[in-house]
Length: 102
Image 1: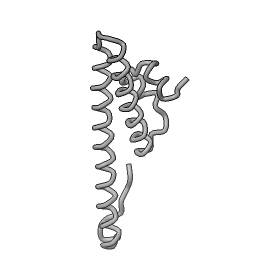
Image 2: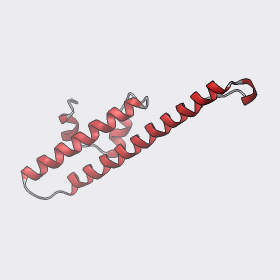
Image 3: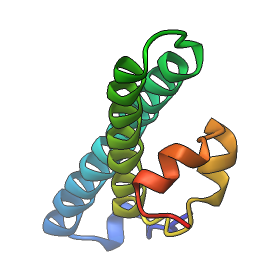
Image 4: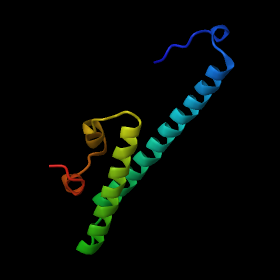
């Protein structure tokens, strides 16, 4: 949580920067939410798949791509550790292995 001084102590330029900073943070949060939704969707499709191996390979690649994009967006938001996201989404080891995780 940030603490801001009363507006009588700040100048117009500083207020403009605060508005821009607020907009940037809001967009980062929205992008993180969209990336998380995509992870959930791709992992659901992977988990319910009961078909041939080639289709599973395509779904596995899509899930790995979505998780990779989500991890990058988390890092842009300042989250460096992904353990909680891995638990929350129940990301399978086979997806993490495609990302280079041991």
